Length: 331
Image (cartoon, rainbow, N blue to C red; front, top):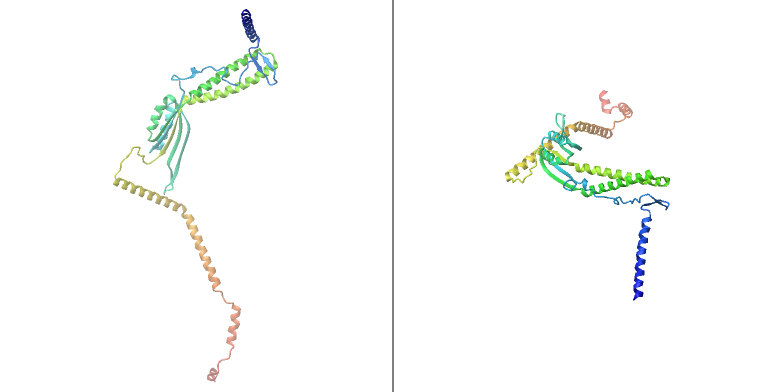
């Protein structure tokens, strides 16, 4: 029994001694290291991992009051009977609410009138307007009042995760940059300086890339985009269900048919007037061609007899003797 107790005490003493040696050895090892491309190990240089999240800290201070970062956008489709005035209102919305016009495009069809004048009709305008996010509702309300609203689509995109991710990456890169600059000030080894400069250039490039992405995302959060399509019409499309009688439907059908006939006939007259010179030239060419063909046909069907062959025949006829009866009478 005494031998067993002594064995346990010796084993316990050996375990305590081993633990103390392990902790002491760990404290003597260099705190940080960095491996360069040739396989050597340098002390005093931080082991900067490629993962930017190594020293990341929460970026909760960059979040909005409700803890969410939102990007809002609205798409509107309108009809208007006063196209020019509506365009003026659209352009004033951007200026009045402190925004700007990102994109604008106006197209239309050309109509030719009988007096030679032209006009652009059935115009369509496409606008993309950026306004501050807190003024989005007011700006949309004003645009709705321009004309007849036929379509509206709203979108809200939660970019909190993306914003937090970019902020954390930037914070991590800033910490790495500061540590590299401090080490470059204290390092007197040429090889270490070269490695540190290469790592600093890489960190700077990543930092600028993430900063551009974050700035772009912040602009999207601060400014909401309103996309507007506006069509010029002569009459508004009903936005509510309308019940019509048979007589009203019949009358509308007749008016639409008559309007289509008149419009088509006017277009035909315009086309005919425009094409008349070419038609006249073509008819003149056909008439000249017919005249030439008839002339050639007559010439080949009725050839003239040669004058040299008819003259001797006439002379021979004159030299023939007179009949006997005539001679008796003369005697």
